[in-house]
View 1 (cartoon, rainbow, N blue to C red):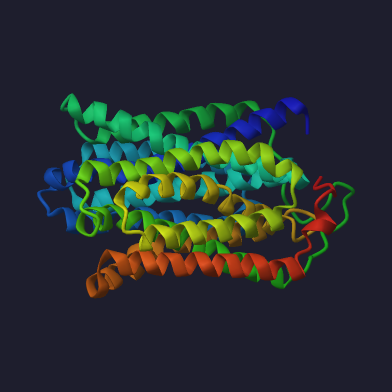
View 2: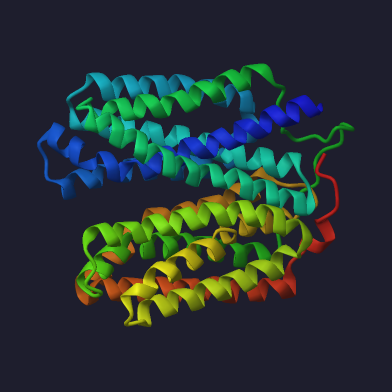
Length: 394
């Protein structure tokens, strides 16, 4: 692997996270316009975005096996064709079933590119460098989440149809496509470089702890962020603008946190730091739901965003370090568990809010964060990351 290829493939990983971030986070911005376009109530329209999440989940799950069968470059070429077809479908069709299908295809494309992006980083970098690179890659997800709502707002303000937002997102895939043509990808398969068959490695119980932590973390985070605006307006007497800025504060601090931790993580043991961060995040969330002082919420949100930013990627990094050679199946397994958390967000929190209001959903999220802390703590007794942290993956 030449250094030129390594840099090129790293940029593909950056763009793959930006693509998924843009597709997922822009939903809230375009939802009302799409509902008007199809003349449906917003609540009914939001259900069709489940197809998007289902596509991401399916692609991440299946790609654990597909990566060893279909070369990565060919997958990205195929993804490009699917992306073009999906965007054309959105632009030309007035049918709700075609819209749902296009959303599903967008999800599949995002899932494929994100799982390839994650695997490339775990394959190209080793030990603590892997963790800091993964964090920096993940910051592109938040960056797209910050930039694309601004682009969407600008397009919609000029009265352009909503589907132009997806055309802009498609431009990210054009960059991935061009890069994929220019660089050599690692070959995955049943043999090592010396021609011997690859030995199957046992994953160990630590992977189970990490999988539970990934699911609870994403479900807790999205469940929390999803209901903060309602809690802030209904229980804390804020107006919708202030409530919205709480969510903005969280994501901004999250992005800054990722950049900070991508430098910090190189000097610390990832298992210890993730346990500490999970504990801090759990405590901050508890403070958020118990405080009666509305002026404190902004500062708690900023701190929560900053300290929780490194948790998910460190969980994935620790997962990839549980075997001597980073395994696409293992990395994808933990990613899949996190994606299941995304899928379950409103399935789990919806009924809780109906019964106990937004505060109950936030308390549930706090409980899930506590589970993440316990899993990270237990991992300390069984983790193999110290054995494999400085070994090669080539």
